[in-house]
Length: 208
Image (cartoon, helix red, strand yellow):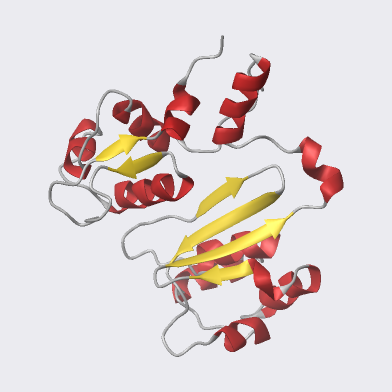
């Protein structure tokens, strides 16, 4: 887990200031970093530990503080504990899913959606903190009133225009099912707005 977290920072594509996302569930830790494999790299290269440096200066800093040893060594440590199928990547994202042993499930906090389900079933707050950050929570709070465009959300956040942080957070909320597009068949429409889904609204419902 330590190596996967370090890799998420060292190999993240920081060009648009998008940060890695860490989602803690009752049975797994899911890590998403921005940027897929570098051009010319294959899955076989990845699993064999033949890595390439995306951020040389950041790698140097991590090496100076003894968080990394040599390029590719972390992959071998990860594969000593997990199977290769924990790695998934798309054109723009790299995902690592670390499943936990069943005997530790009960000790882990709920995700935001699980917390809402717990409230509905038991009528009591689970007492855990939401996994989503305050920025994502503000977006959900804003959309609770009515659908909004990215420009609307940016203005509400005090930004002149949508930035990488806002775009990344919206993608995460869409993927998690907390929000949805009002024009789903035209994701890039200039009229596109985002609305709160029943799952997202459930997370905002106050405990009885």
